[in-house]
Every structure is written in C-alpha cells, then in structure tokens.
Amino acid sequence: DAGVIQSPRHEVTEMGQEVTLRCKPISGHDYLFWYRQTMMRGLELLIYFNNNVPIDDSGMPEDRFSAKMPNASFSTLKIQPSEPRDSAVYFCASSFTAQETQYFGPGTRLLVL
Amino acid sequence: AQRVTQPEKLLSVFKGAPVELKCNYSYSGSPELFWYVQYSRQRLQLLLRHISRESIKGFTADLNKGETSFHLKKPFAQEEDSAMYYCALKGRIQGAQKLVFGQGTRLTINP
Image (tube, rainbow over all chains, first blue to last red):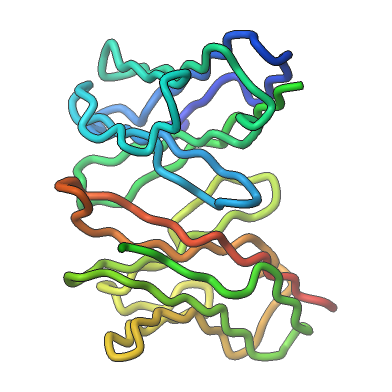
C-alpha cells in the first residue's frame, strides 16, 4: 500500500484564486482527517469524516474552506477565494477507527501570493 | 480547554547526550497521549503512544497524570534523531474523538 496519497505536493497561487487539494486515504480506512500546519499554530485539525460523512468541521477556519468526500477513496479540501494567510502545509490522514493510529500523507505545501 | 503545550520550539543537543522533549497537556478526562515524528522530507508518523509503554528507537515517554506531562526521553541521542517532534492528545472534545497536537519541537543533534 502506498499509504495516504495527496496531490498536488506543492501549489503556488495568487490571492483570490480557487485552490483544491486532494487526498486518497489508505484502502479500508473509515476515517479521514484534514489538518493544517503553520509555524504559528502548529498542527490543527480542520475536519474529519467517518464513512464519507463529515463528523466534525469545527476546525474549518471560515466559509472559504470546504471539504467533501464523495466516496471512500477520495476527498477534497477547497479554498475559495484563497488568501495569503492560507499559506501552510495541509495534511490528510486516515485510520481504521477513531481509536486506531492515524496515518499521514506527505502533505501539500500551499503558497498564496 | 484541551491543550497540548510543547514549550521548546527548538532543541539542540550533542550526539551521545541525553535528550528530553517536554510536553504538557490539559484535559478534563483520561487522555490518550502520543508522540509523532517528522523526519526531513518524510511524512508525519507515529513514534509511540503511552498505552503501549514501549521503547521505540530508544525513546520512551511516561505519562505523569499528577504533572499532566508526557515528556519524551532518550538517554543517548543519535544524529538520525534530528527531526520535528509533535506531542498529541486524543480525547473526546465537543462530542467527537479528536487528536490535538502541540506546536512541535525541532530537535537537532549535533555531531
């Protein structure tokens, strides 16, 4: 298994543009998590899904952020419109259950100019 | 409020010296504590969890409920230990099981 797959690995965009980050969890994992990593705030949980259903989105910073999981093998995190303060590394993680270990993807490094 | 605090953003020690990365937490229930590590150009991965009570790569961490701490220790640091280390707490927060991370400590082992 290749583990959690994220794309793109790097994204540079201009303020106001729409950004879509993608994640493929480990096959068979029922939980999928999106995190954001910044120097100031460290790693923060944005949202997580159980069986494709969003369970907790209290960490999503504002309405510009949205996440979907149309099926068990794919999730997207969208920022529209993007702002320079959204620049960060976005990680996706998955796990079998809420209690099991979370396995992280390589992250997407986003830079909004 | 549930919180994980890693007081040191940067820690530098010499090879062979003991190393301790500090982690303190606040949580109203019985938390589950973890240490994650991110080596250069690699993804974040689980290093150890307090319920396992095991030593991984020479690292150990003991949960001290009295001091609400979960410090990571290794008696003799090696150069390959240089990485970013995150302490994390898993607990029921606002009705959902969540993993809350500290801000991380960048450990550098000098030759």
